[in-house]
Image (cartoon, rainbow, N blue to C red; front, side, top):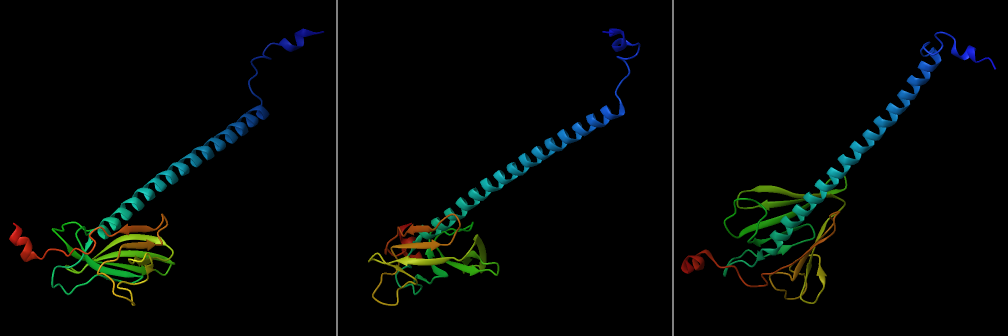
Length: 203
């Protein structure tokens, strides 16, 4: 075997051929493309995860705003002509926990469900004292309020059209939000709110 032909002067130091260079560049381009695709996929996953966490946080906050406002519902003071009333798309009454800042006591709250053109629903809180409207919640699909009477039946309006019902329902239910329905038991029962005059006497 003639070994000398494999060790010709300059054979080991001849460098890369054009074909070898092209193959190396092609491999480098393929690996770089795969790496960039992987990094892009990871970035998109991180964005989606952050968006989903923010969505869950916002949903929980809006749900709690609504729950607190409904938990604070109460009858008007003795002789007050304003009574709680509600339909499938709106309700109005006194609450001790309105969902807006700067409230110093029980106020009249009106919640309105508004159907949007893209088959979504907007829940707004209206403050009659100032005429302000506060957007509380927005979701895809319809939304409906219903009211639980003393017999355990859900009514589409309050007071119900038939029978002698108390001023406040036993519970209020909102169906529609993507995170599930909101069901709130009215804690105040039918105890009336103290009038301003009686509050001054207690001070």
